[in-house]
Image 1: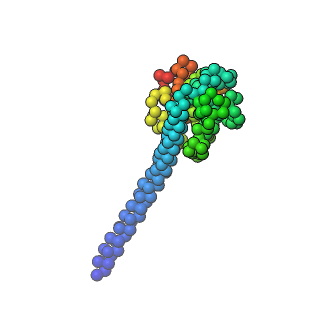
Image 2: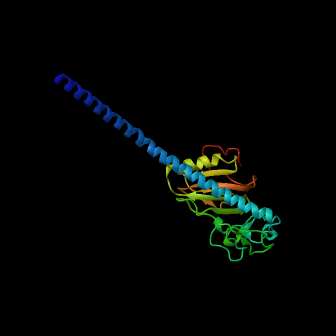
Image 3: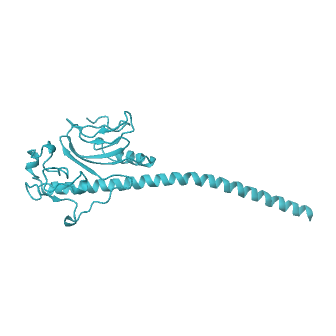
Length: 238
């Protein structure tokens, strides 16, 4: 009877030790993947958000270009010196001196549709209640989408000065979903570090200690610049 009691007590102790060991193992296994899972979720969420906003901006602008295909000839005639080389069918920057009541910045949310109405400095806003289009807020950790229409073509971009690892991972994945030269990532931490030009006129930069993501709508391959992509996937671009 005593021997059976000791045997059962010994067996129970073994099971307890095994349970403790398994619990410790499971704790280690689940703690590490939890962090990785969060990183993956953040990356996926950011890629999705940036991609949907990119496509919404492009489709909204293209709708304007198709509907008012003649654009505004005054833009192409360079009525505003700062808009030199601008394409008459695409919005000039929202703070262009040509526009009636220009905005105080280049935010994409303020772009207007050339040709609506005609050759006029009072173009209708693309993103407005009257148009039934509302540009969503920029993703958390990022600044507003910015607009360029000039000698290098037409593009828009977004920037962040945050250093979260998932941001660079997300932008790299996002870049890979576009054709070569259609989009690029400019990381000013890449050598040589510091602000990097976005246009050949050196009027726009991706600021130092930032990472920018840019999408081209039209590219003038004779002048445009690609100062990002340390991985070389845009090596064939001008």
